[in-house]
Image 1 (spheres, protein in one colour):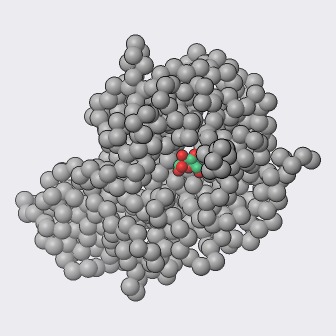
Image 2 (cartoon, rainbow, N blue to C red):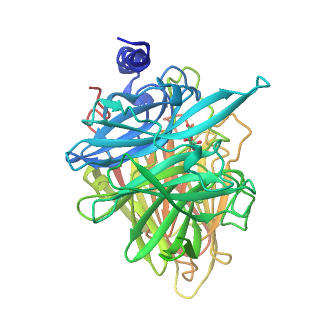
Image 3 (cartoon, rainbow, N blue to C red):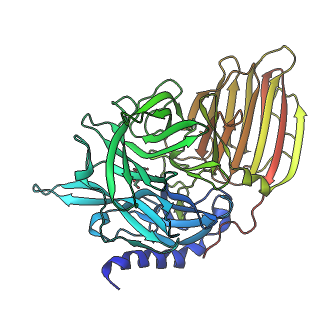
Length: 502
Ligand code: FRU
């Protein structure tokens, strides 16, 4: 065995040896977590041989980021996962400092092609290190992959003038109806801010630069990481994860964001012409999503439910760090991208409890509690009266809770996890404008042991946050200032055995 394959074999042996000792109840019940160690972006998110394949940025040996490998899992329904041995390790000269993010497509011969960024620190004449990024390919059967001899397939020579070879990463590949291959890749232009480059290929191996389709112009953050591009219900969507953004109203917050640009590619100029921009998540933790086209026609995305400024482990002795969102079904409505939980989650619902009620002081309702549950709440004013404020606490008990507050006059919804158990001085609150529907609001709350995702008004907004709340805090309460009718429906979510090991 040569030194190169040793790196992957060592990671596989390590995860096989230690991951099975992590008790299922120390992980989220249905938000994907790595077998062991650190995880960030979803990679190679694809439908292959009748199931979802999820690869991910992975450092098995530690709960902190380190030399990136690709971890691997599969799922029949996007909810219950089976771990597989790590798929790629940093074992070649061009990727020795990290097998960075990338994506997957199926080839005509039935094999799976992975395209990823090789990260390599080059020593400069003055002794300093320069991170150089190139694109590479590995092909395999869905379990074992071989990096091709002609790697790297895209290097600095394939960049447009002024393009950065330091920030050139995260290829998202897809196949056109005629079978040819396209990929969007994140880059930086000479002004130092992000851009998305389009490449094409006839066979998936030999690539040609096509055009710079859109760029930040220093307006929407700096580097644009993890681009994605797809067509949806007649619109074309470019998704990017900008770094170092400045706040912009309640739409974008400081730091890393996820942004969808709705518009279309002008075939003559090769440029993406924007119609509108929107944030993909108004909560605290969501980044680097990737989407796939399910054979039944649904466009399904999954994102890293953490963020770079807050992803330090918080629980002593915890042996995994990083979780994924629940896969989200994407649709378009009046030019806006909507996101809703994948419908397969509903198969795990049990014990429905439903109440229609009015409250003023903080109140819990019989049977409405839990930490692994799916709760839908609809609030509406009573008659022609207005109400001032609706407040809901989830994962609540003793001094802990995560609070959702809605003020219909301003139509602002806030998530506040400052009492959710965090020991870190990081962002704990975020607000967003939601559609003003005369005081009516619908929230679907997916609560899990280590996180919450709140889908607003059938997917018009999502707010996601990781939480570190003791499992005993399983209360749910409601309070209203003024008169409002609440309809609350709760299902427990039940998963036999949860994630399995190979
Ligand atoms: C995004 C990112 C990617 C990169 C990867 C490295 O979170 O920074 O741009 O490929 O993570 O782990």
